[in-house]
Length: 123
Image (cartoon, rainbow, N blue to C red):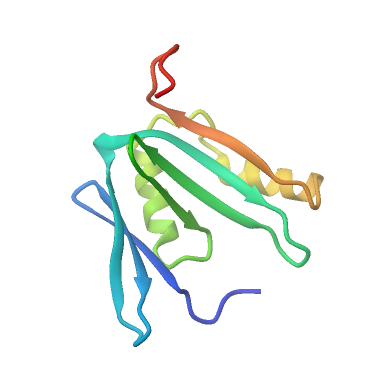
């Protein structure tokens, strides 16, 4: 079941991921930005729900995390940008998420898609 009106929107402009939130009056307002150079880790999160599961991509930086849900406007644009810009551990992450949800109903998981953190440095 798709949401009728997304409350969030994501976009990539000049290699900067931007998260927008719809204001009370229906206008989009940028609430968070994260540059490609600041991304240290990318995770795929699956959160189980009774009717449908929520799939998030989380871009982790040094000082900020930017999370986008599969139902957000612009999700596919940012996902394609991510596929092109990062050497993902799971290049077929969409299929992996689908298979996990199908095989493990009502169980969530976190899947590491990319890490730019050198071994031993967990800051």
